[in-house]
Image (cartoon, rainbow, N blue to C red; front, side, top):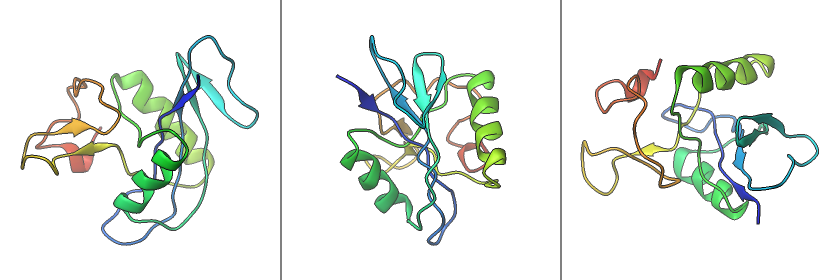
Length: 123
C-alpha cells in the first residue's frame, strides 16, 4: 500500500500549498511524483492554512513532510524553488504538548537543524 507524506507552504495566514512527498514500499512513484530515497515528492498549489494543509494530506493518506537530513532538506528546497515557492509548511507540530515537537507522520524528530527553537527557520 502506498502511503503519502506531504509538504506544504509556510506562513501564518492562508498560503499556496505544496504537497510534496509520499512514502512508498515496493512501488514506483506515481506519475507526476519525483523520487528521493524511499519517498516521492509532488508539488500542488492550493491556498491553505497549516491545519487545512495537514487535513488535505491526510485525505490523500499522507501527512505534511518530515525532514531527517540536510540532503533531504536541500531536495525539498530545490523542489520548492522549481515551483517559485520559497517558504514551506512542514509536518512539525507541538499541538499535543507545548515545545515538544513531533512530526505528523509519526517519524522521529531527529534532524538537528529542525529543533523546537529553530523550527520556524528549519535550515
